[in-house]
Image (cartoon, rainbow, N blue to C red; front, side):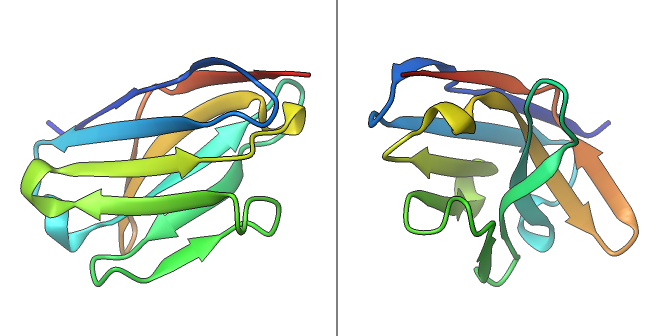
Length: 115
């Protein structure tokens, strides 16, 4: 059974930083693309950042230069370092794991950025 568990969310003031972590279990972590999506109230879930098994990264335009995605295959963990946070970054952040037509999701962690 594949399990993705996020942590690190919380309340932060605008301009602050948070680091999200997602620990995966139940499959071979290193072969999967990992990433983060988010869903704000009343909006659709959207891509934040992904990192492939080879380490290539992709970011939403809205977070480029502020967020950094990374992975530690030895710890089966993907991270999202979020700097210069803005109120519009407020959302539930979901960990994603995917390969070909298979995908898995965590339950999400709430990030709230106050102005």
